Image (cartoon, rainbow, N blue to C red):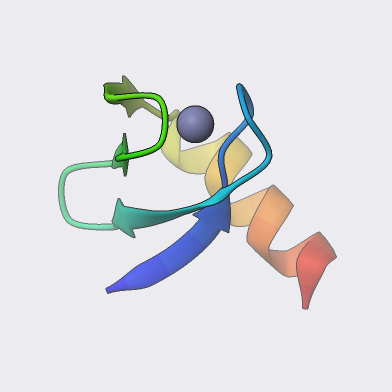
Length: 46
Ligand SMILES: [Zn+2]
């Protein structure tokens, strides 16, 4: 399981790379993230 910054609240949220879904408990939302955008963002963060 990966963790990324939620784009809505900037809290850390678990990201399921298999489904491309970010599940933020703080917001109570589940976001679908485009795989390409996610990969670019993770590469940038690293
Ligand atoms: Zn959030």
